[in-house]
Length: 336
Image (cartoon, rainbow, N blue to C red; front, side, top):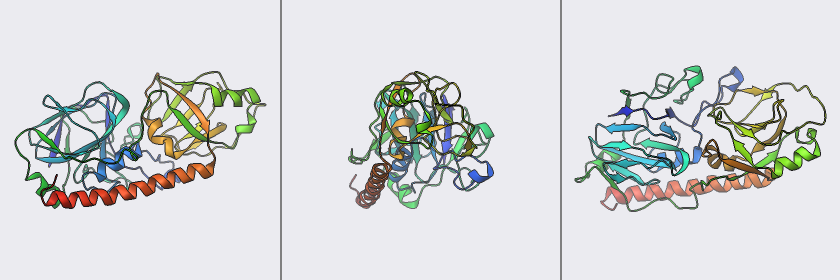
């Protein structure tokens, strides 16, 4: 089964949860920027949570569904529509063959995830289907999707069966969705929680206070590799020479100009700049939806609280899996 790309959008790529285990060889992890949205998009249509999805940024693509298809959209609201009707987020959607999915202006957040029953079928490269555009690695020929590309997918027998019940009209939505408790709350100028980094105390007292109180603007040269921030320059108590070491998503490093950079999905594998903090994993989804030009502030959180919140979210995702599984059973017997 196939989906044809009629227009490519601004930056549309195939992603999964990343290329785990190869950072020691200098291979970036990559993967989706908003992991919660991508996972739920997959679960809503009966996929595994790590199946490949389409990540769309700010300006979405135009896609032609060439067969009856079960999809879901999660993440930012990019004004999705089929025909003249808006397509809701966070729900399974049955799409009729020949229907065209379009996107308009971003209303909230900047990254949306399209999951298709069966998962986007591109070759595994180092155990992942994620696209790393800078390296021309993985995904759809190692690049962003372009006009005329065709994406393949292999739906399950259950998804095929459910699609046989498609009625007239371009699409149908179910009458249920996931709990609002599991959906990330995307909002303009968010507060991002962080844990102090190993070099936090190397900064002068004024800079430490300003880091906790200033608004940081996300600059236009931010991307999947890193968010470059702008505010008062942070200063060290003295010049230091650090050995490069492994970095993770959410590492907040401060280069010589004093302007922090938050490392994101396509970050490099090592870094040698002072690390003033690490964004708590619980806030990665919110952070990944901040658009250039928007502001964010930082709030310190203990590592114990960060771990507790993450465990609570994973527990909630487990409950969502059970709930969706039960909903699919009902759908199999005609209750949508």
